[in-house]
Amino acid sequence: MFYKISLTTLIMIAFLLSGCDSGDSDRLTEFQINHGIGPVTETIELGEIDLEKAEQGRQIFNTYCVACHQLDAVITAPRLRNVANRREPEFILNYILNPIEMSQRHPAGQEMSNSYPGVKAELGISESQSYLILEFLRAANANEM
Image (cartoon, rainbow, N blue to C red; front, side, top):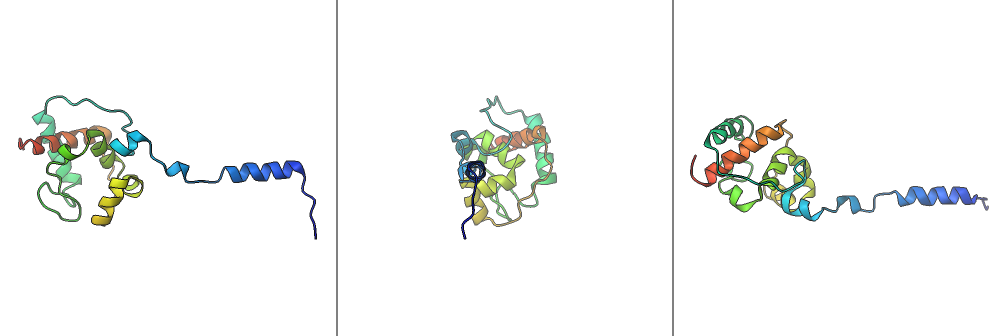
């Protein structure tokens, strides 16, 4: 049995099929590869370590992060001593602010997720709080905390 399909119907089917996900949406930009996936989309310039902000960051870290992360020990997630020497600040901020997507889509995040299969959760940390945590990690890396 043959069906007559109008040219308009064929064009509509082709248009709908071309909109299907071809995997391109999973491709990361060069910035995302180097700096992570999240709200921080431009490189940032960091000045000298601000110990007052670092202390605020330590308090936030102790509230939200310490259950899984330690500076010098592995609990369920990687130790964070010297992370600011190994990763770009944008990467750290994006991981703090977007841990689930980072662990699912970013190659380094996927590797860490496989090595540390603990729960990744959106903790509701604000962008300003994430900068304070970063300052704490920078100070800890410099052995100033």
